[in-house]
Length: 613
Image 1 (tube, rainbow, N blue to C red):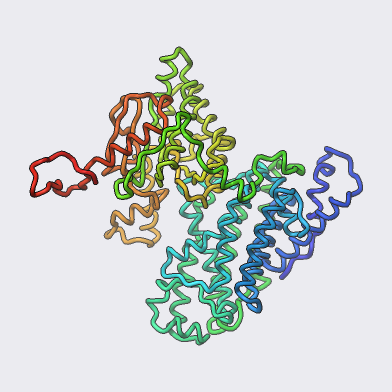
Image 2 (spheres, rainbow, N blue to C red; image 1 turned 90 degrees about the vertical axis):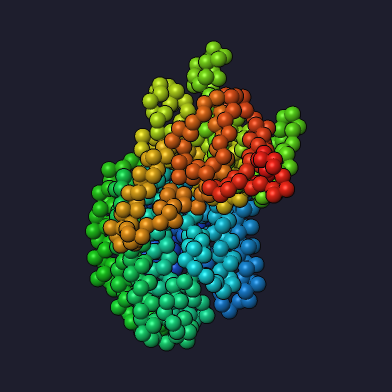
């Protein structure tokens, strides 16, 4: 059942200051009237294209709804451009690309002749959204023009991640408004599974429409256990194999969207929205189960009674939660006054080239098979560096930030794929309060304003949010969202990290999975453990380097660094530059890594000196 239009909500942006008493009410200008029209259009598109999403957006404060509409309307427009089956695939692909390129130009100009993009540009500037990470979602939409085939669940999940940037921007709105939808770091896996469950529910719901266009958006890994199911589906025949397949997939999706711990610690308004979304998805899965053969003829829809049962109490909870929360509603911004407006593609490419070494040094030539894939660094000696110069210890951490920039540039220069740095350990809370404050504030400032923003570096965070300032947690999450499509170097910052703590939490996640029946506790393997780590795709450490003269690993990456080559140097961290990284990698390339095997010795030689890898 469609909700009645609420055009007054679309006027919120142009009348926010008047409503809050900051400026007197006044007649709308031509530009304000056009902006109101743009948001009304986005509202209408969201309501018609995604009634369930529209109903969920009614659970957020009215001041946030227009931005939600703009984001979702843009996603819907792109989806429609890619899904026009009466248009040649090459033409559809060209239209999606043209729309995306026009958005980049509009963001630079701060306006658009297209009403949906006009609302999206206003939302991006007003709420300081970083839209470059939507390029991955747009690329996936371009790919949807062609028929999709997935070999396994891993490929399918990679495709599902195209939805994540759109959802993350909605989360960012809550953050900017002062009611963060913050996820505990140890719940990110639950969040990703929730997104997977939402996608699978959507695919099962729209199965009839997709099959009519010749699409079967399920991985082959899911189809293989049910012989003949794929052929029956493609011919739109309901059979025992199809019934068994649908039953298994609905059960799987129901498990994925039932993640109550995901909202632990969230603002109650944000938690209410996610909990309601989970209830809506489970009800939709019940409708898929109940549809039977009709599933292949038309999409199952929820009854008015079911929707009312879900949304009536959710609206009451939302009203109470948001009535107790003072929100920050930003005024309009121009492109020149925001630091988060994406640069044109050509400028991005030029600025992401790391600056050369000040002395002109160039990286050594290391054979690809002798390069480490992953270097981890314990950046030790900042405080001692400052004391040696008669400075307060916190000054050493400011100097150490410049060394991080140098090492990242050196990693890009030499072609390193993964760099992990130990920025703040769980044991560092024992230090002086002023020193802790300096370290954490330096990290936050560098994330938002530092030169790494413009390099081809994907930034990730490993650690735990407990006790960290909320502003730092938000900055870390912003950096992850902003850079997740970059491919030059993956930089993982370990902040409030402890190796034993990581292993303990992973063991707890395994225990929860076993209790939920997702894994057999009698057959847990190393691979099972690795899949439950916070970043299961992070490769093992090949080279662990510590500065400052100490020779211990200090609870740093114990799972990943089991077979790491160790490299200790006496210089304090602020004194190192990229040449020290290159020297460490050069030394690594001369070592013989055996992983428990016998040494490699030439039968014609008694020389037992280490050989290159």
